[in-house]
Image 1 (cartoon, rainbow, N blue to C red):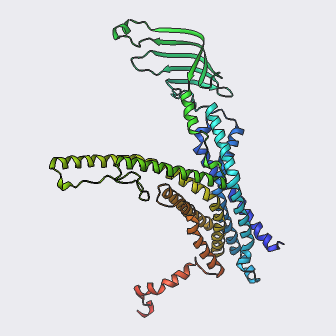
Image 2 (cartoon, rainbow, N blue to C red):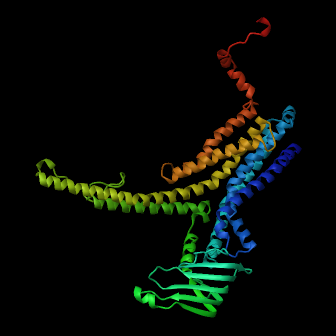
Length: 484
């Protein structure tokens, strides 16, 4: 049964929690909008499609927003208790700090379980839906973002300008100018039209444009000598209606390539990732064996690429150079030098391939481990936040926010640093995923101990008294004015 004090503590906690979560979630979503702005503008998407896409893309930010919210809300809650002397009153009534922290620790534990199930089940599904939606946008609405009054070269091979673009789907045009981009030895063509309209094409690889009341200016100079070009008259063809098709398959292919749907590890849950990791490990071993075989073949069995593997080919017995003639010795040295250079070149060529294999393998492991690691971060951040709040005894959005941001920046910097080290092969990916928690947990345990023992960690007078004898030793005593 929840006692009144437990209900009061939980109620006080959820006030700043909801406010902080909303603010941080909005900030992170705005960052996503800024990154994806080029993919959202100029595509003719309605508001519902944009909101649905943002909801899919923003699910991943909950992994960082929820731990940071728990950190900030716990600091503000216990800081308010200390600032209003409610914490002192509870302790005076015989309630220990551990008992006061217990209900919020249980709430934080529930949030950590929620974050695990959310990261394991909801985020992969939303990642898949977002990828599908971006793929469909790239396939049906390529990146054609026309700006009125400016020359745009997004259509391959053409430079176009529209004076006005109107209509519900930006399909009505006024003041159309289209110039075919060709060199000085190819046929030249320019089209000027009073009006135009984009209409759906039967083939999605083409952009269909219907023009009204205009002229076609052509110069057929391809494969024509210079003297004959001078004799050719300028051609101007007037038209009432002209239907033009522009090949945009290149744009669509690029968009589909960047948004192509593959067996992405971010679409899988914790247990499915085990299979992906085992498969990637097996593929990496096969690639390394092939590289090792190539090097062994290249060096006639002298060396192996991996120290742990023994070359299957029988090593050639090296001749003694002392018994060879000078010319024969030089030829052998030259041959050895060329062989070493070829091996070095092969090693440099294969280094990038091995780096990419290791990077992908590390990314999958880190992604899997963080599903669980971020849930543990919620509990660690609660210990840090609750202990700091009870020690500093300051509420509101001042000092608690500053301290929380510093702690989170340290966590985030460690997170990114070890991730880059794991990708480069300088750190084990399992250790990289858990190292931020391993660094912050002792700090949280130490702060909890200091809070339980009522230690004045942030008391400036305490540190001033500690250094007072040292300051007095190097400072000169001033004689009182009346004794001078």
